[in-house]
Length: 394
Ligand SMILES: [Zn+2]
Image: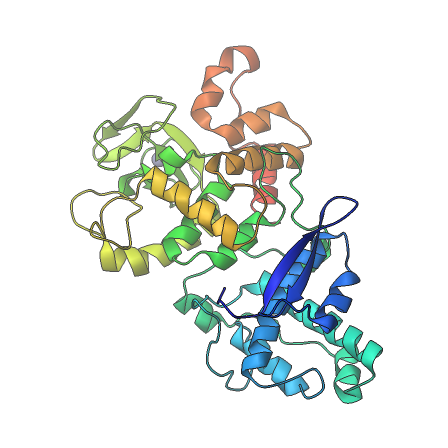
């Protein structure tokens, strides 16, 4: 946020909870924004819309536009400025510090917010009938501009229909789990392909942060029928190594070994198509540019004096925490919440089948309870289908 700019203000409500409005630098409430936001009083939408609207109103100030003068073309240009594909120049980025383009989910919400705002304002104020008529029947461009998205290294996985969940805010179903929509919202705000990859990999597996940051390139078996023979589907091996330069260590330490240069054993996690896609984006860009020779580790630092050296678990935790704040998600985003969420989702998708939940946890820990429950099948139709549902593949 820039000092002296329009900003969102949270106000404690008499009945508990918060309400959100928009104020000018002199502390004056923006009447139009306030009247509109009041129509969403008490819902998570109010906060979401307040932050989208303040972005738009700041832009409008810079464009010297008002509610009475703004045109449909201006709104299309605005959507272009925040990342939508529009057939016109969208002008200079105005947001400070420079922010990355919105992803598909944020674009949908921004469009819904603008339409609702202007239709509301024009209904009350009776000005700009032309734009009101256009917005009532039409829609705004929300298709993310792939070219710009790729330049900014973003998201590999988008929710099928973010608007169906609109209005639920970011309710956390369980304190141990992630807030609703955490994954797409984090992917919208992360700044690097590495960070998008970390979010995706934590979302789609039950890996711990030490396991993730301790991965070596040789631990990844991303093609079908890897030489290790441990698992015919794309997977990775979390192997405990004492000498990792970033001191990341897998907490569970099942035996692993290298046979003819191929890693076998360790803790095996299935790999989703979104994980593979985020991996290629990262490897062909940031890793290709910055990786220092020798250490062989997957995740590297992208800035500072140790650029190219392994990325630490603490640095990864900090990235998640800061991204959670930028995305305005409630509470602190921790790696552990991803684990709980993933296990919960797989269990949900399997109809509560404990064998499937154990398989989702990982192969090795499942082995430990073999004697009680038998060995879960990592390729049973039930597990396959629960995984695909959790990964959003069906
Ligand atoms: Zn393998």
